[in-house]
Length: 203
Image 1 (tube, rainbow, N blue to C red):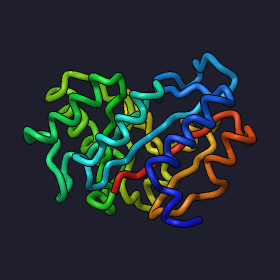
Image 2 (image 1 turned 30 degrees about the vertical axis):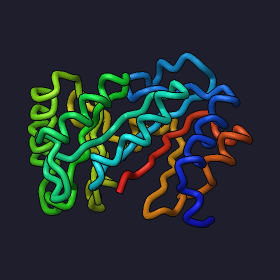
Image 3 (image 1 turned 90 degrees about the vertical axis):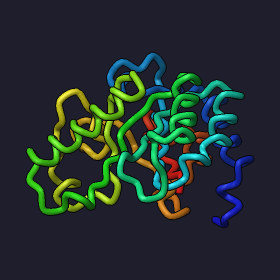
């Protein structure tokens, strides 16, 4: 695998492979209510390049794929509430995608689950109030061992790291430009898994 693996053309190729093999792209609200035998929850964790989402949005709009974009409220690299940030998020929603909270787990390493829940719900309220949309899922950035093993349940939200909530979905991610497990193009082309949680990190 090389850096060419992460070219825009290859992203389109992956999505088209999924569509050609009858995978349904759905949101977290469809867990347990999928309409097709094979499904994929496409997720983008936006760590720093909120303003760089346009190319992904263009491809997804072109081929009719919907994803969930997880944004931070405390990023040192971007502000989702500034004029430019709001414009991108408004386009995300106008294109029919979902918005999720990308919560900075490194800020609550020593917090107990109740404190973490409170902080997550507080930031969720900020996004819902600003963008007038329902936040249905939270993704933890740099989650601690306690978060990963704690199966934290937050009222009204899907925790993308919850083994209980995501148990039916096979997880594949491009963390640090390195695929965890099988390559998604191979997974889709060979129908290796029925349900896939596919994460692309926008760095």
